[in-house]
Length: 447
Image (cartoon, rainbow, N blue to C red; front, side, top):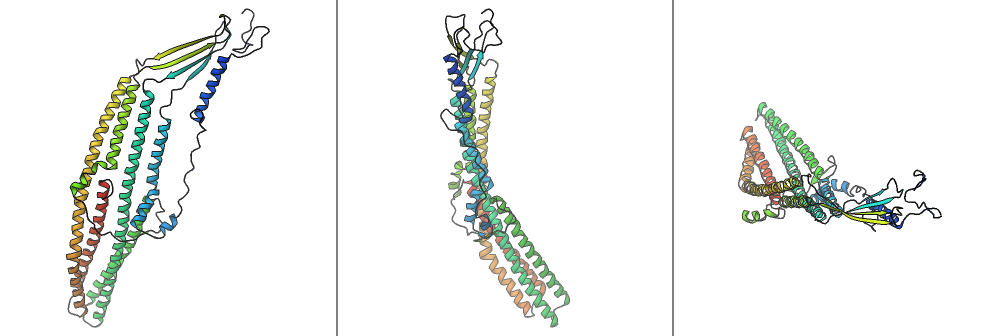
């Protein structure tokens, strides 16, 4: 070794006279392994193609303009909700969770290095391969699969909530249209009454005060009709926002308020509350926390590694030598026990939240059922008992005034009472349909 210049010779090269410089086969094998491991960051598992680039955002939906230029039935609105921003966001979260399952359970990184000594100027390749044999990889996969279950159930919950919200927004648009139509009819009746009053005034059968009062009532009715038209555009904007459409585009609802149908008993509906997506999502979150508890428990085990070292052409040895060893990393001060206790506490909290979610769903179901019953009964009573009598009273008062036998105050009172009953009937029907949508949400869909 005397007289050798350590700074002019490459590591691992053969330096004896008459021999060419070369690397030992073990060193070449370890270097090839290092290259293969480095490539896995780009190509995933060995032998798999490189990961595809992130997909481009979807193009704008075809037919959106046509959708906003025609009247939407409730089925049209619910079908369009499948392409809404809320649904796409939930679907993206589920896709991300599915991708995480494939990435879960990867082995820890392999350490590769090169060492040398002062006296023997030889490279000694060193590799340390972790051996996760205590269940850590399986625990990681369990967590990823549990997170995917959470994402799936949350997507179902988002879709169910979106269906309820779109239904209510569509019903509000129908109610606004019916209210505007009613306001227009009232404005027409008040305008006709003002004409009758002026005719009687010209004939000397009505006072100037009656003309002023009739004109004021007609102006008030026209202002309410204009406000009703504005309310339509506001309700259309709410529905368009839920569907991801331009809120300023024209949008109308077709089909009118749905007629009430047969409804199952409250006990039958309450028996289905456990299948609600919110309840299933809470159960899935509790399962995910249980999986994290298992992951924390597996992390308390020591970490085992296989160590490999090659000493190539060491002049202090008769030939090349190799060393194989095992390293056990013991987490003495890693607070792994505290991490496991924390995971168990989160699991218990998730179980409590699951019970709270189920109780909230049950309360919403009962409340929606009772509200639907009340609104449905009110709509029936108004339609069958109140409105016919109010229409007859208003028509009799108007006919008497037209013949010069009644006063203007009686006609105005009858008209206002009829208008209030008709508006209340529209509101009761809309409320019955809205509470039915709320009830459908509370039972998890499908009444």
